[in-house]
Length: 368
Ligand SMILES: *Cc1c(COP(=O)(O)O)cnc(C)c1O
Image 1 (tube, helix red, strand yellow):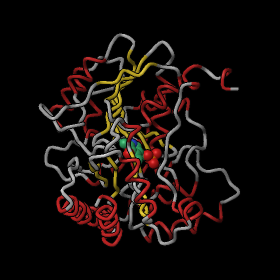
Image 2: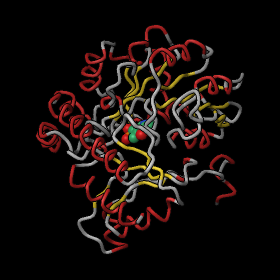
Image 3: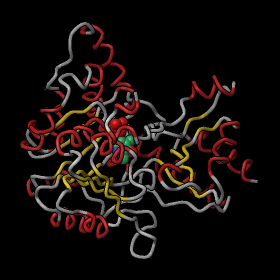
């Protein structure tokens, strides 16, 4: 049937997720493995979320609120915008796909950086649109592997309808400061949607790191995406959102599946927003864990890309696929990133102290 699929889909390489713990157990017979492969929150969700979820069972037979009234109201208050500015998604990946479905076609193109989040090329190609990939920084004028905004601007042509920017980017952990990012958005033609993907926003603690949702009044073509999958610890429930001016949100909502965010996800997201202490704990655990991993890499004299997220890409100095396999046998799941054009690197998510220790010990053993 492959020949009958549209050309973009024929050539599509599906998203490669982190290996689930259950799969490692099944295939390798390994128990008590640690997974540092999908940038999940090692603390899990807030207790308040677990309590809120229990309430969801009473409504199990009902369709969810297709307009997400409560969650949108909470998010609107949090961001100081009207509820009409919010587009809820089944994960923020869903919102990225809505953008592609609403704005791309085989006659148009999307621009993004080399080494950018894998979902941008996938949603673009699934539509049959062209991907225009800007070379990343080589380390001379910006962080090695980081988005080069001048190169991205140069890739925009008359056919471009969408630009995807990850700030910070996954898997590199590199980020863009407010001044240059805002200047970029100003320079993009008004008929091009600029998506600023802030999936790791809550973790970033840099003075120049922008909250680009504050710029929405100035740019009808700006969409900022956030997620509950990372710092809020709700990856399994699939809930994220976009913030934009109402006209752009209206376009996205035309192609959105009516019940794309289930009731448990809506309940959980509302409760998670209310538990600021849990969020602060998650951020603190990440700060300490990142310091632990970085110290360990330095001890092993392994180069890495400085990251502001909850993950870090480390240069194994050899074909990382072999290191990945060897780590699996040690019961440590990390993420190879050869599909991101980084065949020597592994992306390691920040875990709890004993998980980071386990990973560093295994790395030391495997690389020795
Ligand atoms: C993890 C991630 C997402 C979020 O995915 P969800 O669909 O919300 O789980 C979005 N963008 C980037 C860059 C990510 O790394």
